[in-house]
Image 1 (cartoon, rainbow, N blue to C red):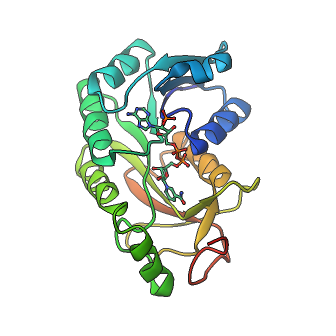
Image 2 (cartoon, rainbow, N blue to C red):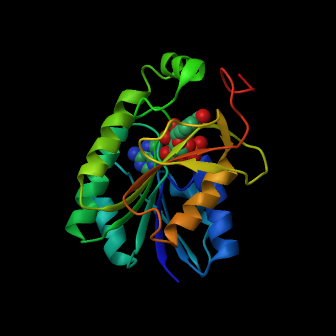
Length: 212
Ligand SMILES: NC(=O)c1ccc[n+]([C@@H]2O[C@H](COP(=O)([O-])OP(=O)(O)OC[C@H]3O[C@@H](n4cnc5c(N)ncnc54)[C@H](OP(=O)(O)O)[C@@H]3O)[C@@H](O)[C@H]2O)c1
């Protein structure tokens, strides 16, 4: 049993991961989010819901200490570089090591071919802060697992393969439920520690995702 702090707990992948953590593990979960009233009805013996801003290291550190957190799972969108800085600061000050961090495909220019060109064009303004966040985390002493999902779908399926750092990215899409499933797996294993993993649905190669 572990205590998991979920930053951005109302995010779409996070909501899927929360269901899986509750179903498949005995972990206790702390939902850290802005406007926490939105998830207040989820509180239970295993779930604590707290108000928090992930751009504030002191708020993250307070939650880590108060709830005896073993793993931070960051499911955030917004100022990614700032999030990375503040999470690292909070984890260093509390001497916590394990971080699962959702980033994006394309941060290493690892997406090959026509899809890679299309992806770079589409994500031109979106990728730079993700790239910096990933650089900051990989340069830290944390036991991170960075996840680089393909284009996300809300399909009700768990079906994925992984690529490692330095390998060309495969496929074009992956379901949020698949990413959530990998988050639960990586939380309970040291197999992916200090790795930066691409996630895609097998056999979805193409010039762009099928739904675009
Ligand atoms: N769409 C794609 O195809 C794709 C592909 C690869 C990667 N990604 C990335 O994967 C990540 C997760 O995806 P998702 O679908 O789960 O995203 P999401 O639903 O947008 O969730 C992100 C969460 O971050 C929270 N957040 C933003 N600023 C915050 C702050 N200061 N403090 C606390 N929480 C804050 C948001 O909270 P509020 O509810 O309060 O706004 C939101 O719930 C995102 O970074 C996304 O860009 C997306």
